[in-house]
Length: 314
Image: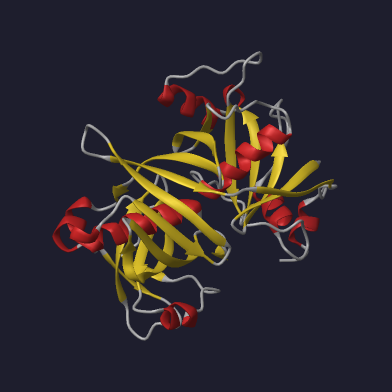
């Protein structure tokens, strides 16, 4: 199998092109490919498939009211977590996906244009910007609107390195996130995120957990800034999480109240991204995520032929 390794602010991916939708990538195969000792190594795998050739892609097409054909395909981002499980989408992954599609000459993107990317969380759009690519991430929302309205928190989070449970706010970016505010950089660095934090109550589909420290001052010249670490569902701690940075900015913006602004820089261990909130006429807000993406190397790999080979390192 031909593959490309990509990264976006340190969130790394195995990228594969499957224009005929013929690759058989089971959960165990994906987990083996993403294993950093026995496979290529990545936070997840992204397969590029014409949307009309995959059931999830057809569902995304229908929801978006779009059409994909063999002559004019729209590309579906079949994203898998590092443990092989399906994931709704990944903001850093969308940037890497767009960069990969352009490099593979599967589509073109002029400076004045944007391209559609179909995901399990719905339609996303990508355009070029100075820092790399900007992704239209769709609308953010509260996972539990009633609890969020009452107290700006809806759960308690426990993690290794925290002496007490911390209140948190759960945000949906098409996938679930739970955001925890910490008082300072020392508290952030003290966390042991090799072990999954516990969230009570846990959202039905599980959740990614972001820990954030606001800058001091939080806002400078109408631009907010926070620092973040994340434990991703089905992966573990990663250097970055695109949807997580959007969720973190949304939560801090809620907590900031009168000091809330529309543009935020979120610093993660793998770099920095910019998150922008755009008001809609229906009262909701769209989110745009901008940052770099890079193709690291390409190669060929022979896939194991039997389950025993996949399980041999477990």
